[in-house]
Length: 334
Image (cartoon, rainbow, N blue to C red; front, top):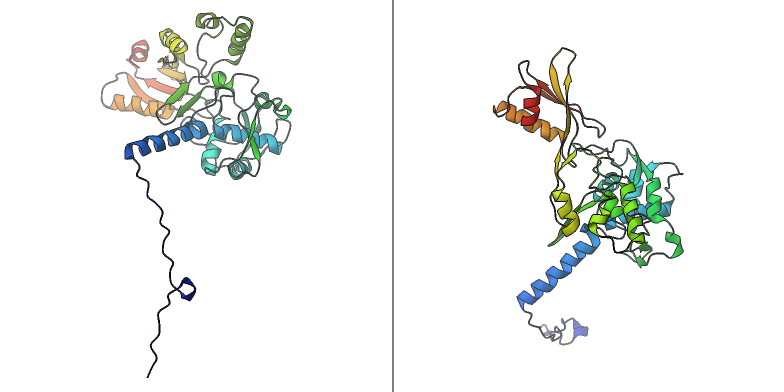
């Protein structure tokens, strides 16, 4: 007769120990939502979306420049593969994906995105209509202007903090010998707030800074004697000054712009409108498509054809006119 086994009664004999008696703390849903949302918002604002007013850079841009400085990719050194920079930045400082890092790197090299580029570039950096070549095909190094953002950083001019994994240190902000936030502007959308600062002329901004240092009580109108308004890298004309005044005085304003166009005679004796400058951050191909759409719908008369010949960041949009069209009337309608 088989003996009856006794079930284990202690943890040593195989039983699962009971869970510790941890008290459950009641939490108001509204309070937890407010606290969590605020923590998330501050994380986005401070760590990703908005620039620091002291150097005008978002964290990803600052980390790219700092990584290139650490590796010695300075203006007097040979160009290196962009993939090397974006990969090293991701591994050491910015673990958010190499594609986003490469996009930020390229933007600092595009003369149609920044009034004064901070990265020197070899290869196809794209256009307002098309993206850049892959990072394995392009090369980069620091632009001489970027060295003025890094000047004296080895003299304990800025605070250093640990990186995300604590393996090394990175600067909280770059020393920045010039006001990059005003010179190159910046766009950013965070949680509950956003910024859209236009670029300005470097010489005008420096003159205004010198005047402000010599005259600390200078008003906005005094400084506008030096800085007339934004200076967009793609050109175009600003219509009126009321929007500029509102932006400088209150921080909010709308600036209306118009493309630069001229009426020219073609080799065949016809007339055409040639657009050589467009408002900042507008797509030439999108504008050409919209004009063609209006022509097809019968909303624009006198236009025979629209061709986008832009390349290398240079705008060249030609609008061929019909024989009986009045070029000035068509231009005004556009």
